[in-house]
Figure 1 (cartoon, rainbow, N blue to C red):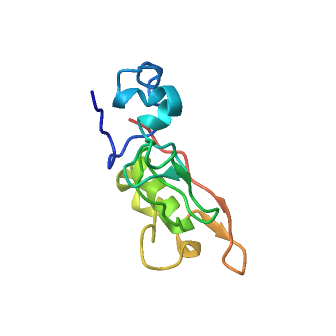
Figure 2: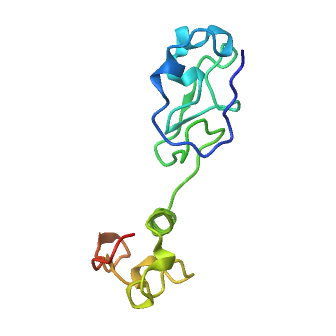
Length: 134
């Protein structure tokens, strides 16, 4: 049976029961392990998984990465992209406005509350007040 999960938004890990199942994807897990299910983070393939025609998933260049398992391409992530993802994952829309002034705005990240940068714009640190969690 074929198991196709490419183009998803899955994160690691892939259950070992899938990676060790030689009946999935033509038995390619014997050769490629979990990569036959989905390419790992930092790797990609046009199909999203390793197969005999591609010889395995390809590592992204040093200046790019992938965000999800089974990626079909690599992306360049800027600091503001990563901080925006952090904001979304941490439910920043629920934070007090005084804690997140300028976040996800078009201004540079050095103007976002809690972000500390060097004079040249290099991100140095983040500072967040403790807030009540759900």
